[in-house]
Length: 332
Length: 252
Ligand SMILES: Nc1ncnc2c1ncn2[C@@H]1O[C@H](COP(=O)(O)OP(=O)(O)OP(=O)(O)O)[C@@H](O)[C@H]1O
Ligand SMILES: [Mg+2]
Image (cartoon, rainbow over all chains, first blue to last red; front, top):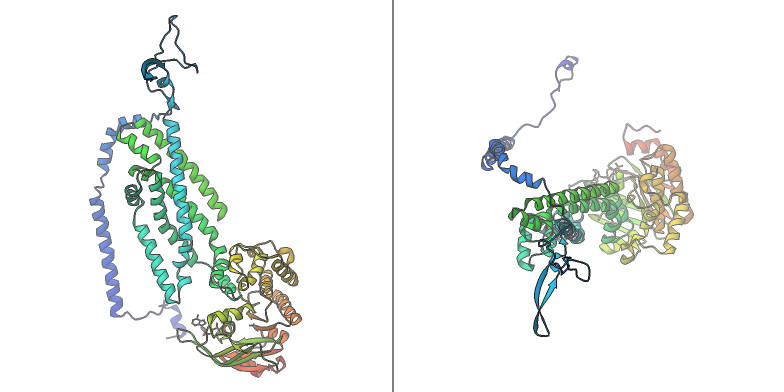
């Protein structure tokens, strides 16, 4: 290289490796891939019928629905029939022993003989939309809680096998790594929605198939996140614990676990957060919770009840979001 | 000399990428001896220490611990490690657990798995850990997390962890390289003094020739994976240092 004083004013050209034919082919491939990606992007806009005009035009049709949605049904009690009390001779309403007006005459069998009796049953209030929906929102939260818990418990031990830094070196390790990674990928590949449909077939509708679907899918998700956390730990404590003569298990337990536990907890909370919303969707295929009722209401055009659903979901998800964010911050 | 604690016989180690880190090293350390290992960066000092306690397996040659080969089986290498403490340049403390727990992790090799699982240590083990902390004079910090300690204090915790193993040898891989000169002396003082008092042998890789001279009974200098010099610190002349560190060496 020329190092004479005059060369100081010349721009510095950093040394480069000469380009081989491989480099040329590779850069050609990269350009081709970029062009193909852009073409695909364009095709995707076309395929999804992305069109702002349709959106604006459709807005006026939805006005009625919106109006009903703006009036959520917040009744705590509902009455099945109109309350017309039966009157006695004095023109006063007849009351049963609890003081509820008697409204109906019913035919019942007493010692084998038909007897006419007065009844107040239909006049007693039944629980309305709000308590029903609060209860099924609670079920949704419980489905997501158990689903997440099961996933955490199962993916925790598996994640160690799916970490490259722990399985490197031995052939058994490599096989375990490949196998667990494969399992995680398969589980992640099935959308929880599909899993829920399968499980509703298997165990019948209700919250249980929801738990199974969320649990299985979350194993794949959490397993991946957990193992990535394990792969990024500081190796220094691991070597130090190894140097004490500890067994492989103890090296993991003392050298790695304290490093990853806060992250594991944060990931689990985050997953729970996602699963709460996911389990609402799963209700639509019969996997329990508030989603099931929401779907029913929409199908039956009961928009004010559906509106109540949205309201409860909004409040519940917001509250749980804050709670989860708070705890994750505490852990971080 | 009785059976050396550690002895290597024509020890060779070649890394998978072909780097020959150790070439036919014959090295021995007697019980209670304090040996300083010096040499340029890349000379193979760290590799030697990791071969001694079986963290690395030599490609050729042998390491004997109290006359028995270390590398006969993996399980045996592990048994050897129980009796060999080690401290590192970057301390290797486990984050987010207390100082005392870190020290007790020194017992990890001896602990039955079911107790290790629950971080359950017996009162005797806790006493051992607390005594080790007392020896390096940071007993008052026992509840803190390692991250809340200074570098010097962290290395003292690491020394306490090694002591908790009740080792026959302490291997120190550049124990004070990340500390300021004053703290380096304090930390090395603790390590060497305790080793001498307890009759623990010590092998310390040191970057500072001055520290090697001051603290060791014997200096071993490595160059390109071979022993280039071996002898008492008094024989460590400028010619020797020039030979080990190259022409640009200036004694400081
Ligand atoms: N994991 C590894 N894979 C390949 N080569 C390695 C590895 N570790 C060390 N080496 C090489 O082996 C040689 C000896 O390294 P070693 O770490 O033992 O040197 P050192 O004397 O401890 O140096 P330093 O004073 O810088 O710590 C060096 O050339 C280094 O590049
Ligand atoms: Mg080194």
